[in-house]
Length: 245
Image (cartoon, one colour):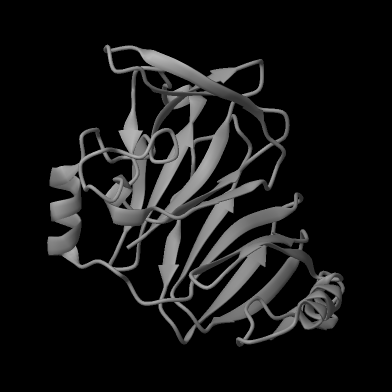
């Protein structure tokens, strides 16, 4: 695509690519776009691609979305989380940054049709032994995805277990946050499993078979699909989470 930078120059930028494409080609597109914005692929598999786009102050660019796409602005941790926006395949958008600071967005491209319809998801939700909300605030939902805001300032508790029922990925915002991860101990308490430290842009991709159950359809998969977390340390943990239907 073509964008106009702060000095009136015309810069070529492509936010999404036709598949299949080699990593070398992807790197070349990132280099072309560098004068206008940095564009990094954080995750790419058969179901989902996640890109981290940073747009320079005083720049405007256009992007043509070839796949169902969610764009989610990233702001400072002391601000309220902004809403993501959905863009259907074939949608062209213009992104402007009239401010004095870099504009950043996480871009989620859904590369496959949904696996579950509403009735199937209702059945999975009813079968789950724990709440199925993997974040505190549902920010967007459509036939492809559910998008969740998950951050420590909205509350985290080791006894607040949740069960994942869909494939999902989450992107960490900010450096240096630390989480303790717990699983149910079978007696109403929490069993500590691990401590994890995160860097900005870290992505966790999680395949969820069988609605989060073992093959028997009864036993939840712990801690991969059933867990809780607590924020430890001084840095607030923040993530954007996507569930793929």
